[in-house]
Length: 148
Image (cartoon, rainbow, N blue to C red; front, top):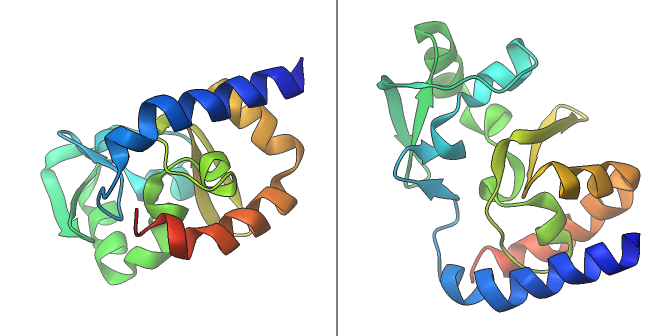
């Protein structure tokens, strides 16, 4: 069942999302901003997904980043690479498979001080079973994937 779900996810992403995301920006962003408008710093400081405020935003990496507090905005501005999600906020599992896929703010994990986002909670569940190997694959794939 796991292999079937993974095959379905991979096939769906390739068929549906890859053409839509071809030559997309390096940072996944919606009209609400990067991480769909959620506060990247809050994942580290509060341990949960927290919606940011548009009035507490900054542009970095060609995307708008919103924050829930002025303190979080300042922390991000002082070191964006520390808080920004890996792989431009695209799905870490998808990146390990060699393609970009959108993410949901509530499907996240912090591994070795780095934020990773996933397509949804089901994909996150598969991701967590083999994170180390998938991170290695995604790290190898990202230089090529980010150019797509």
